[in-house]
Amino acid sequence: MLFAISILWRLALPVFAQSTISCPSGQIDMLDMVTMDATDSQGHQLRGAFHMEGNANPIYITLSGDNTNGKVYYVKSGSGHPWDIHLYDGSYIYLWITERGGTSAEWNDVYAFKKFNWNNSDFTLPFVRRCVKPGDGVTSNVQVPPPGNGSTSTNFQIHPAKGDTLTNTSTDCTPNPQPPANPGYSTSQLGWVVVDVFPLQNNVNLGGNLTSISMLPVSYRYNCASGTPAINTDESHGGCNDKEEFDYNNTYGLVQWTHWVWTGSTGGGWGNGTTIGTPANRAVFNKLVANNGLGAPDFKCF
Image (cartoon, rainbow, N blue to C red):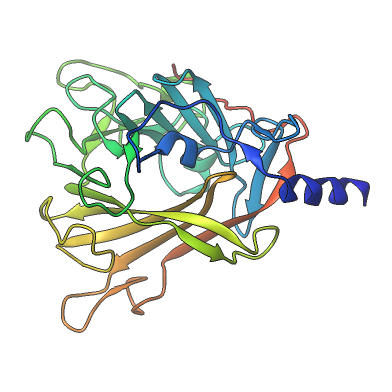
């Protein structure tokens, strides 16, 4: 019971944001939004000591780097994998690494992964700008083309290659490479990607410990036919087949994730592929829980 009281005490305190870059007036540094704060106002450690849990897998957030270059790890179990790993610099936060797929074998293989990469660069799928004025349609909007249309791209590698047997060993990182005809991995793409950062929502009740919080929605649409589908209109289809929304809180980082698919143009809308308005998946991270030594990133390939 003393531990539970301690958690509630920490939640009640204001917290200090980590060091960030200086943004123009009216803009926020998105690195501050997507990560859990390092400490609270009393100097007690948050990030690295606590993580968020809810109705799905836990999220352990680790930040590696300085203000202008580094990685953000979203670790999805106490064992250190699977993960989503973002890169960042002084201009953008980039999507980079995720688990290979949704099967149990892929989820548990620490050597199997997908990686956004184009022309041997990992900084190719910008997710959000570092400095954003939510909802302005300029700094809040990012459009990324399919391969062949510029220096950015939605191209990604699949390690090991499709059809290869998972071994849960280092050979899964780049199995049996025979370049240039067979690089040892498969590639795919997401068509056009369109990201919009929408205005802050206040007094949101996510249950658990988060019954009245502010939340910043980031809409991530992919498998789009073009890069200009009704910018800043969250419910617009715009030729996109999938939409995910990442909801961030300035203190705790990611607190909710939702995925919809397009149900069809005739009388259709965003849904789960069958029922309009019903998400295919929704995860809420609404409980602050001590790490107890778990959740350190475990990515073995490089």
